[in-house]
Image 1: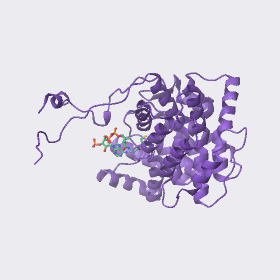
Image 2: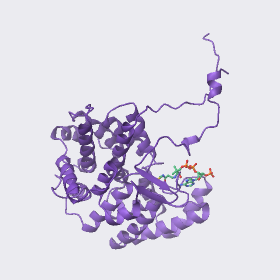
Image 3: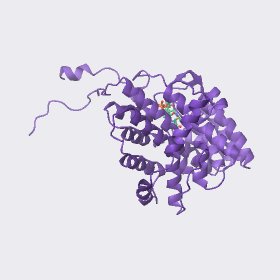
Length: 375
Ligand code: COA
């Protein structure tokens, strides 16, 4: 074995568990407390709006009233998708295509309609962040309406991103409770320290690639069922279980067969995910309002069973599934909603990476053959 190989023969932290990959001041997780820029998620969910949280993540402080109005105005200015891009996006296949796969292409395509995409100017990069954040909800609605053969709905001026997402998705005045619920859900999903997709965005950004490339990388990472894709899987699991009485047996069988129960467990939180607690209350309230209380009751029963059988607690994806389902949102759009929110955190990470950049280039521990000769 050569010296170079021996140098990297130490222990490996599989999945980089416990490895500190960079310094960050965006969001922190300490025990079961998640903070954005120093504010707890509970405080922000109770008192702020998604737009305020985006401002906070990008500026390291909350806006005053004038700043918030101005910021909302900037988002508003960029919310409408460019006409030429819409034509191309509408032509993309949607049949048997997962919306996250579509979104991955769509964001990349939007980059080709942004004349500033390659700009190195800080103000241009901020405008790209505003455009992507303002448009992510509209993209998801465009996908949904295109696959249903429906006309596109224009966003309404002066309304929040949460409102406009529901408005452009359903094409009817959204229930104020749904708007509030969506706004809180967007706040809760906005950032989460060095999660898989934020890290993917940072890795791409670290090569000094552009904003659209970094965000496309993040969407690719978010798509997987071990990350953002879990919320969709949770609802499919609930539908598969079908009834309250089946819950316990289903969970025990799954655990016996070493199957993962979606929406449970976390790399960092070992004493519970604070977002799950808030989403559980939201799910209880909304499912009751919509005459779907059984979905919450089943979820709670599964939660109790997984805790007692395996000692695992629910994560952000577990109760968000029934929250979205009770609003009538198609199940395969649950993960895209994650992106509608997380774009704000991704952008904060990309900017933070560029502030103090060094390309990510770790080493691999060699486990292959050595010293072969070409025959
Ligand atoms: N269901 C059943 N068992 C689970 C589990 C789950 N959801 N999550 C973790 N475990 C078990 C593993 O099987 C493993 O058990 P073992 O030690 O007996 O082999 C142990 O707990 C550690 O799990 P591991 O997968 O190594 O944890 P991780 O830190 O690598 O992964 C997650 C973290 C979140 C990816 C993992 O918990 C998971 O896959 N959860 C389901 C998907 C999900 O909800 N993702 C959304 C995350 S926000």
